[in-house]
Image: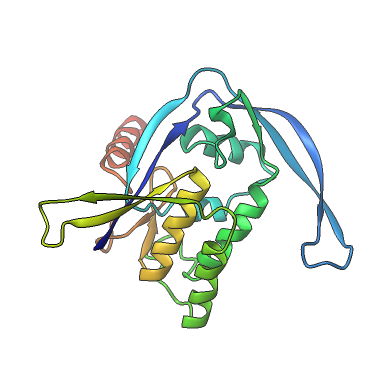
Length: 223
């Protein structure tokens, strides 16, 4: 048996917008009675969103790990492009970002396993202990909600396989982070959209052909 692709099918929300701002008090999870205040946002949308499907891990989980969740513009850009991490907008026309800081904090130890170079290749530098701790933190979290889908692929030598189907965008990002941390995948930042992507070939500047074409078109317009 082999482990097949990681799969995510969900919706982005191009018409999403920030409604009201929520004042939040976070309790120290380690105890001690300490609290901290912060901001969260009520996200609203019109329309049915844009469906999309992904086969295989994606590196932009690291964008979420670095996201300023107190910045409404950053929050809404993510929702418009990638969707609502917890799927609330699938069932109603509003959601909130109350759980976003916790998800970002969950992904951060994995992001810290790489160098912070944003102008070239970001390489894996964590020790085996740091690597293991980052992976265990993610797979033991409440958001590790994977459905395992069995199938037979007659095109390979060992046809019986299991696909991992993420049940939410949060789960997809966590599973992508686990895979990339496990295999120490090199990353780079797209020159056009600013997303982290898996660097399959040294010196690659764009995450997709569409980003390459858009960058070229915008460069011609500027000239």
